[in-house]
Length: 115
Length: 112
Image (cartoon, rainbow over all chains, first blue to last red; front, side):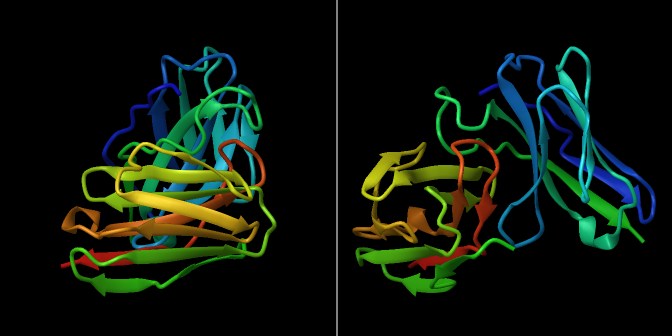
C-alpha cells in the first residue's frame, strides 16, 4: 500500500470548514483513499473513501486531485465533537485480489476544534 | 453503529498468565481483525480472519494466537502475557476484503 503523509496537528474554529490534507504521491492506479477518525479512547470510525472522483456523504467530502497524488478531507461545519485524530489510508480496491489484509494506520492528524 | 462488542473492556493481569480477549459481531461479516494501539506506534494489525477457521498473521503476530470457530466470534489469546503486551486492543469487522471496516470499543490490557 502507498505511504501517506499528513500534518501532525491542525486547529480549526468551531462552525468553520476543516480541511485536512493528505499526500500520497506514490499511489497506484488501483488504490483507494480512505479516511478514518479516532475520537479519544474510542475505536476508529470510517468516514469516507474514493478512487478518483470527489465524494460526499453525510459526514464529510473528499477531494482528490486530478493526478491523485494528494487529497483533502473536508468537514463542512466543524463542531467540538469533531476533535479527533484523522487518518488517511491508501490501499487496494475493495475485494480485489491484491494487497495485504487489514489497514495500515500512520500517525494521522490531530484536529482540534476551538470554541 | 455496527454490532461489534469486545470483552472484557478492561483487564489487569500478571506476567506469564494466559489471557483471552473476545470479539463478538452480530453483522455476519466475513472478515475480522485484531489490532493493538500503543503510543508512538498507532494501530498495528496482529491477526485477521477471512472465514471460519481461516486466519492469518498480521504485522505484529508474535506472542499471539487467534481462533474463529463461529462467524460471530474471533478470539485473541496471549499464551503467556508479557509487559510488552500492555496495550489497547481493537477488533474490527468488514464484509468485504478492503478498507471499509467497523471497529469495536477496545479492550485495555495491563500486564504487570
